[in-house]
Image (cartoon, rainbow, N blue to C red; front, side):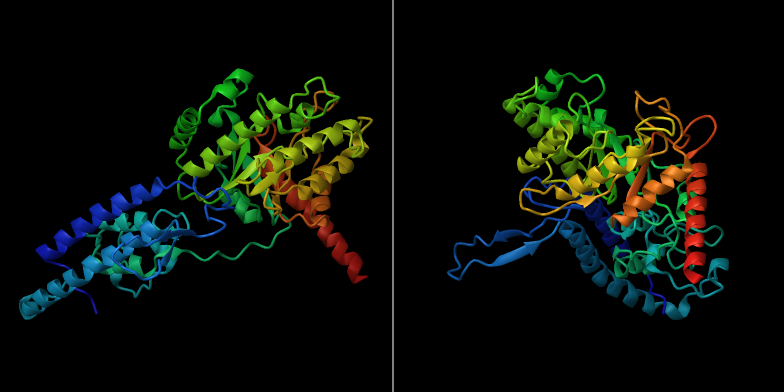
Length: 476
């Protein structure tokens, strides 16, 4: 039965809801997680916040309540429902009084066939969640005639944006279930670009690859290529909040609702691989006090990202970055590992979800150390898995590969990584039990001859061929 939605009372209620929900949504976007230093991942605290009733007139024991980061959004929904119900009753009664005198509403050409909206149809901004932002979109176009041309807010496609559409939003409120994954040789492989998503993400998804990770350039958190040590140490939290705030304000893809992985690419003036230099007495840069100051600077920047993009997962670039010689017992590798471990003990990883070992290919086929690629990759995986937060928990490990060779000492520097080599690296990581691998490039176009999409297609073809060969061998 269609619900009548005319009447002054209803319109006033609708206006009130719009004002309340929009205000609530904006205030929710400003929620901070700084009070939960042990929160791990996705903006969800590792333990629930608690608060207590402070009513002095009651002699009863204090009552413990639970709240979550979505509580304000839920409040908006419940309040909207509370306002709509009496409005609905009033308008329904008023409408029934004159129902015998009203003409039957002309059927819309959009409503000739029965349409049953799904939860996905209510997700108007396509962010994977039906929330107050979607409700506001319906409220803003309430009453629109969509008989000639479809309207975004006409959820049930009956030709009018009305109370039925808003009630559909309420009944479908929440996170959409994950869709079926594409079974592919590229499953678990993500393309990550610098401060952008791919312009052809749909083609990557069709191949079975992902494009749900975002590499944040160091300048976004006050660590650009020209940042001096003095700049790093003197930067206040307020300055970093302002810098990162400007960055995300220009990136419409990011915000309080972003739930993907943000990888913080912080390399200048201090790269994670250099941390061990400041705590090794044999190093010319030995300075434990400076080491602690560097770690605190990293921690502050990570916390700012947590505060301003509260629902994201935070990844840390270069933890670890193994030396290209691939010798775990070398002085250099031992020093680097010592730096990662002590920084972790000082809490640098406590607000981090994912560590991202940098395993870019460093040598080409004619380099004398070409055969050591697997060795330093193994060191990166092993060291990454050994690191812990201060509460003893392990971190997700997602290695970073690249489409090019990066090593100024190599005769093949900046050349494309052969597809066979890239496939070898993906297979090695999978054999080590690594479920998710990222392949980095600055943008969609790798060079003048090829693009990320083209290389990923070639990688898929190579991995498919290997799988088919293995299936044939096993069948024989």
